[in-house]
Image (cartoon, rainbow, N blue to C red; front, side, top):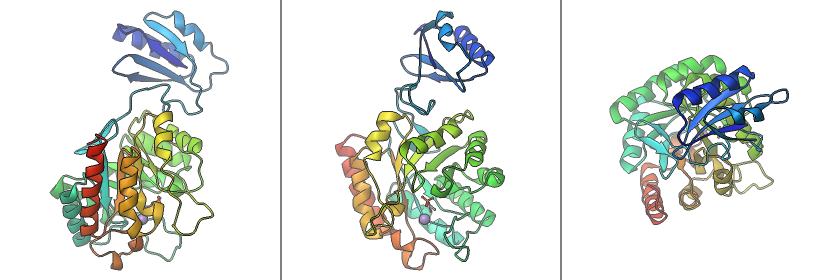
Length: 336
Ligand code: PEP
Ligand code: MN
């Protein structure tokens, strides 16, 4: 249920509704919009009489939330959400670019990447220290040593650090160094992990599972939001289809669809979405044209020697050129 407060509702009246919702055994989320404040009452509503809240002081109306996801839904919050971490901003007219290597390999590799991607216009640095690899024999990441290198890159460049956390037990460790916790495609439905990153209070970049429907994707986001963490970005990184010319199939229609259903920012990953470096520039530009709120792009000083995903990584020059093209499109459609 959504309890829509009157325009001039007082803080006491809003708090009163929060208390009433909690007394019903539901969770209360207060969303302060530009137009109005709403109190979302979420949880199992079967035995509650939430409609009766309509007669409460300062209440304009009580509406059901029809979507299966609640806090993520646009019904609850018509205004788009903007996520800001350091200089990185995504959503509500801001285009946030996250770039860097697939995995952290060395201090020199990360430092040179950070300087190059920042110069080209990125405001966040990516790099996996814990890597979910298909084979147990592949490079698994530098772990805490890698996190320290990322934090050092932030200290020197001011870029926000985006890095993956793979298990609930490692959330505290990764959160100590990261600004944005990435949940990988393979973990999109790891519900205990989603709750743990929800509790961490850090911004979250949630990647779509390769075979997840959009409703499943949004319900996964709901697990994070339901812990009281509103800073969730949804990342379309491609889905598994019968097609083999790309590593995954990157559906850009996800952007307008998600914009209709949710207020959360939508980030596109053209690197994993295509699996081929030569396709990444065009798909980045296309994503911006389709209204993406951000991009996450794999960039490596020497893609040929990368420990992971070199075949889909841009070198510095290619990334710079891609950013130039994206900027022109963004200006044409008036996002910044
Ligand atoms: C990555 O970003 O390097 C990664 C492993 O992505 P995904 O979880 O989308 O496969
Ligand atoms: Mn990768």
